Image (tube, rainbow, N blue to C red; front, top):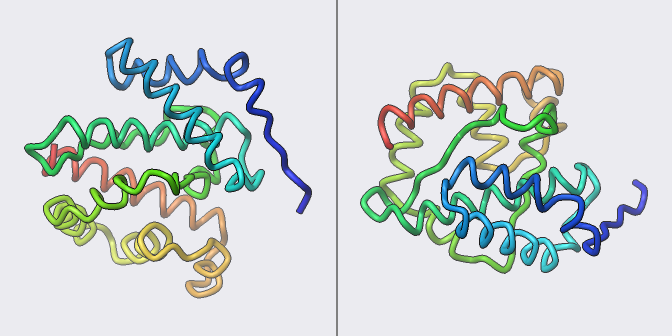
Length: 184
């Protein structure tokens, strides 16, 4: 694999408008959107070593920003386990194909992991997973919950990588609809 380097000196010029527009459409608060974009750049700086080059810089920053937006909604929505997650996976054009693998954990933000342990949210997710077709549920669990890599899942289930992503997409879409009806 080639050595992938990122250049944070260009982030503001190249990505700030895009990240801001993405954020403002989700939080509808100009000041909060600016804060979230700033937090995204800071988290990107802190986790530059995690950048593997499997996605573009912009996609990598968007994945960090999505986590920041989720954390923002968790913080303000205390009645439902501090978790409001917008599950719109078709919103940006760079999210084709490997969008699930492009998620980036922020190792400096332990509150995100702590809040994911919320039992009420977990119960709602597992209830929705139980409604998925068996293969979708199995693939979703292996990839998203257990963290298996694409090759392992494909080998174990005898499916192609493109089939895996179709199954994941369908599972996420169904889960988003279920969560929308039963959680939010």
